[in-house]
Image 1: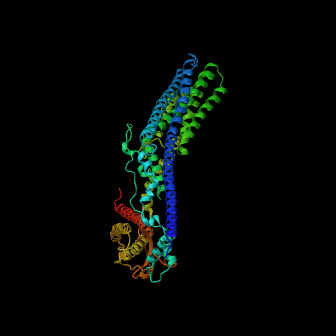
Image 2: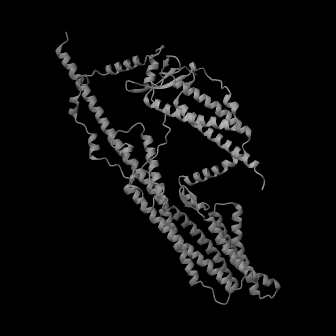
Amino acid sequence: MVDPFSAAALGSGLVTYNRQNWMWDKTLGQKREYQGQLMNIKRFELFREDVRDLAELTISKMDNYLLINILLMGFCVKIFTEGRPKPHCSPSWLHWLYAATNAGALLYFILSVWLAMHASIASHSFEVRLLTQFVRLPIPSKQQIDAARFYAQDFENKRAKDLFRIPVLSEMLRKHTDTMNNLTSKEPSSSGAAAASQQPSQLPRARTSVTFNQLPHRNSTISGVSQGSVLDHEDVGIGGALTANAALETEAARCQHVKLYREVQSNWQAYDAYARVSMAMGVNQLMLGMSYYCLIMFVGENEVTWPALCCTLSFAGCAYLIARLDLFTSRWILRRAGMMMVVPPMMSFVNMLFDKAEIEHPIRRVFDAWIPVIFLLHVYWIHFILGMTKAETREGMSLPVNWRSVLFLDVYGWIRQSSSSGDSAAQAPRRERRACPEVRGNLASWARTKSVQIDRELCLWETPGILEITIPEQAAVFNDLRRQFNTLQDILRDRLRRAGFLDLLNRDIPNEHADSDIWLKLLVSQNGRVNALFKRHCLDEVRAKPPRGAPISDLDALIKDIDFFEGKVSQLVRLLDSSAEASRDSRLPAG
């Protein structure tokens, strides 16, 4: 007979132990909830810091441009006023060249100042807009804070079996029950069942790409971005416990705020790029103007030759070096640019020598005749540099990609990726036209063999009773894969038939493994858990782990195989189309 005092003491001890355990768990859960909220706040602070850093790239750079351009504008005005040449000491055409280049430099500097001001203001405005309307700190609400609160009296509402739960015993019974439920194979193994219950469930990845439907459209105007682009704090786990895929959510949120900035950056990135181009052109014209100024001062007014030659070559060489550093183009084009910058000052220098020497010689007329050539070279240089600044559309933005400074605007490499993909797409047709018949035949044979192998593996999954025991998500993934593969198989058969590969369609493809040797990886729901089990095809043998070295059919591997197969089918279709087009061109009459 049980002593009532001992039973009461035992029951009191169990209740006290379970209450302390419950209080401990609740306290840890509350700290975990608050720590999760704090981590999310820190994470969004990092997002806001990213936006500030990205905007500061433009703001600080434009401020430097403004300061430098203002100083250079003052230098141009000084030359026009206090440094003006003396009259009747130099020919008028040289004064025209000096005034035209100096005025052009002043014009470019003013344009650069205006563009830099617009870029700086727009960048700062959109930075404020992103920080105040979209990338906001996820401050927990009163309801979220209260949700983490608990009362000690809530323990009194627990069931009697929870109040008097015996430690360790219930956990041992649960593990024993799980082990017995997993013993469904002919060769039961308690260790295998335990491994199956502990194996993490991994659903096959969905093939549809995940996009943020809150992102603004690429054609968003300077008026702003749609209000739906705000980062959703609920989507990133605010107010709830951190989930297992919190790292993925963090990455997605980071990409989202970067993409938001990328969208609004199109409102000022072109101004940023052309502000740098205008400043470079202004410095180039200023260097050419200084070379003509040296000819006027040294040769025209002081009649010294060698200092004039050295200064002229120095300023013309500086103009060429600046262009070489700024332009991102071929060496042949850079040589042409150097000739157009060095030749006009040197022609002017030679003409000034004959003019000051007052030598009457027939060759003097030749030098007088090339004065219009000097002006034409300057006009051609302006036309040439305008062609180099022609904008190309990359990632929805028109930028002068021939200028090296544009690459520094692309901190994430979007422009370079777009350029490389565009070049690859342009070169692909030429490569496909050069593809020999042997390459097309090998690719067609591989595609036919791979098609048969994938179809046989999919048929294994269509055996009655297989998809019925899996979870619905795995069955849905398989149905999508079957529809996708059927479409690819129909395209492949049609193109092979039209290309004349009838022997491939009628060829028997040997089977690598017997169907009874293949193990199917199934995701089965047991006691509320998703476990991975391996079933041998056509047999009732089920194991937690397949035999070592046995062939396994997994939907994750099938997804990768079908994706790779789809790419090869697309490549084969392009090769066959290119071959057919080349055959038609060869049959056309010449002329």
